[in-house]
Every structure is written in structure tokens, then in C-alpha cells.
Image (cartoon, rainbow, N blue to C red; front, side, top):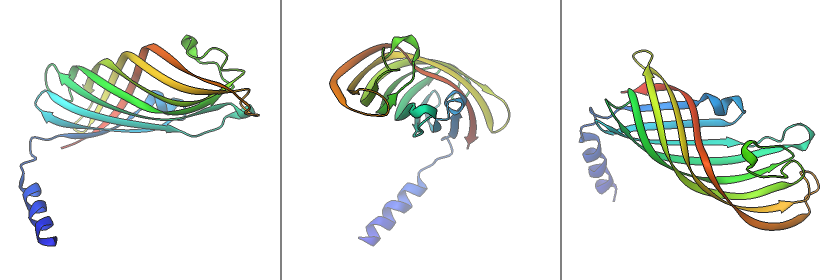
Length: 188
């Protein structure tokens, strides 16, 4: 068993990785909302990359307002010039869980959220457009916007604090699914 693993490891290490390029990133817009986030992107070919980002916000705000959630968002990107530089388009998936209440979200996503608490999961997909600027040998800046569809399952509770269950349902959402201004460190 150990010999087979050693052979596999030697084959994997001997695969040429010189054409690969990796990057790690953080979305400054998520950082501004106290949402911890980290992304990584890997070059698959001269014009294709795979991006995977995740975020987590586990905080209860003042007056027991909740904005707790986690999300994973994989994304395949096609670069018009070269990867990690210039214009790109892509397709992404997203999914996660949430527990929010006592706040007022924009775009009428959950009307009555100020008086109720919603807890559940969501999944969706979308299209993205972005641009990446090279700032230096290892640093880039990226702006991206995505539009898509999200299906959410929720349980509704009376208020953010007391928590008496008031029913379940589904919510369909069509609109922005990604907004990013990211600082990127490129690893060759």
C-alpha cells in the first residue's frame, strides 16, 4: 500500500506544472461587511481558469440583528487575452446557509426581514463579467459582477430574538449574484 502511494506521489510530482499559475484573493466588498472570505484561482489552460471562493459571517450585530451565513462559489472563467490579465467572462454556482433577522436587505429580497428571522439554505447559478489589472509582479486587482438565479428554502420565525416558528417556504431570486473588488496575490 505504501509503495503504491509512493509511486503515485512520484508520478504526480513529475507532472509538469510550469504552465500552471495560482492565485489567492480576498473580496474587499465582503471584507467591508465583516464577512471573512478567501478565494483561490488556478490556471487550467492559457485562456481558462477555475476560481473557488468561500465566505463566512457568524456575527450577531447590535440589538440582536443577525447576518449569519456561509457560502461557497466555484466559477469557470474564460479570458479574452491571457489568464489573470484583462477581460473575462464566466459561469458560477453558489450555495450556502443563512440565519438573518432584524435587518432590511436591499432590492426587496426578503420583505419583512426587519420583523422576522429567516433561516435556511440557498443554491443558484449565474454568469459573470470581470476585469483584472496587473499591479505588479505578484499583485493584481479585480472587479467582477455576476447575474443569476437563486432558490432559497427558509423557515420564518416571529422575531430575531424570541424565535417562535411561523412557517416555511421557498424564495426565488433573479438578479445580482456576485459583486467583487478583489485584491489578488499571484503564485507562479
